[in-house]
Image (cartoon, rainbow, N blue to C red):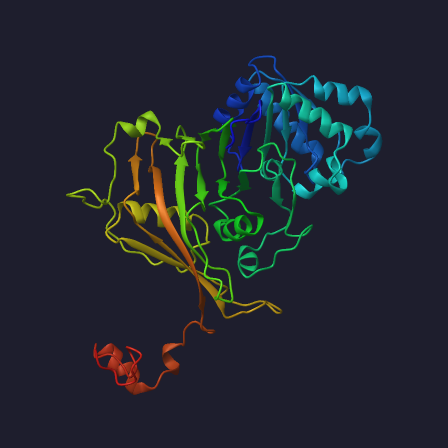
Length: 420
């Protein structure tokens, strides 16, 4: 981050906060000034804005805030949206708030309402005034997506983005820009395998740093410092040393660096230094390069769906504390859809160690609680067979008998003669 970092605080929530996630709500209220802090709630992205706004207000007031709904949303019934956007009294109330909260839903509703055609409305100017005065801008899910300079607009299919579907105003758009030019935000990150869309997006948009916030977690961003809050974590993606091979006909990447941070972990964007939560520092550091390293995880798993729910984090922890120096997985479509471009195209994700990989594992919170720093990642385009496998009954009997007898079959090693 640059030295002229914004004055306010950004809180990006990955979505799907659980009922016991008061740590996130309380941190928001505390950053806004504590008990009695006025917070403006924008349900603009929501498909059911009244219900969603009521839930957010209840959560904030339970933590001591004085929350007020700003009734500016395309799905509000019987509301003159333009009149509300230009209502001087409503604009003044927003500007007088100490924090602004954007709900989840569809992020295009937020930018199309507050920033139509890329032009800021008076209501958005009021939100920016809160931030400029040192206030808090927060959002969950879609409300988190709009916080960076550029954002995903409608890119729900990770694999299609990997394959090159990338259009201005459709897959991506301008965000509200509360983070400056250096940091790109995504949400529902690990649960929905969104590393698959973040990497090509960052390359196309010129970002070095990306922050993927998972569900039931938040990242508090103050100047150049990040802190994770909540029950899950976030992935920091650094492409500062990454490169691509221009001769390959599909997206590819070598040398990306990934880190996973959980509750209480902090990272300085300027220095690149991460400080693990105190509870983890009471545990031994896991360093696969250290003499006498003994892996705590014994399995060697190949991830046939690396973009499946939780796959990326499982692969990162296996790399850190497992027996192998490389962990691999596939991103592909086993059942191609009609019209799917390049149905045979897939991508192998190769996570591998270098001297900078280290981390911690704690169980003090009741389960595995990881920090993983400095995993290396390559993404290689591959051709995937379709069908991926052949039913055993369809194979010649002699091949089946050979396999069951442990002798191997013709062409087992790709040389056509079955020799080892």
